[in-house]
Length: 161
Image (cartoon, rainbow, N blue to C red; front, side):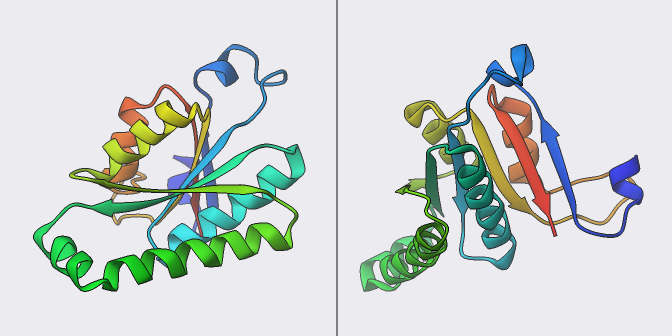
C-alpha cells in the first residue's frame, strides 16, 4: 500500500532463496533482463551499480519474445542488430563502472520463462528488473513481472522510475 500510494520512483524487493535464509551472508549473482526500453535500461543501471558496490557477477539477458514479427525481423537481420546495440549500450555502462558483464540472448514464447530459465542455468540468485507501474488500485508492474514474482525461487528487485 505504501509503494502504491507513492508517486515517485520506487524499488520493491522480494528476498527469496539464500537471501531469505540469511540476507547478510548471501552473495549476489545478478541477472538483469533487458528489452531496449528506457524502463529496462533503468533496471540495468541499478544492476550495474549494485554489482559494482558488492563486487558481484552480472549477466545481462536480452529477451526476445517469439512471434511471427520477431521471426520476420530476424530473417532480415534487423532484430540481431537491435540486440547487439542494446547489449553494447549496457556493456559500455558496466565497463565505465568497472563491472565485468556476461551477456545472453534468449528467444522464448514467454519472456518470464526466458528470465526464469536463464536464472536457473546461470545460477543467478538476484533478478533485477526495470518495470513500469500499471494503472489501478493495487500496485502492479505488469504480466511479466507478476509471472516472475509468482514462479521465482530467486530474490527479485523491481525498479520503477
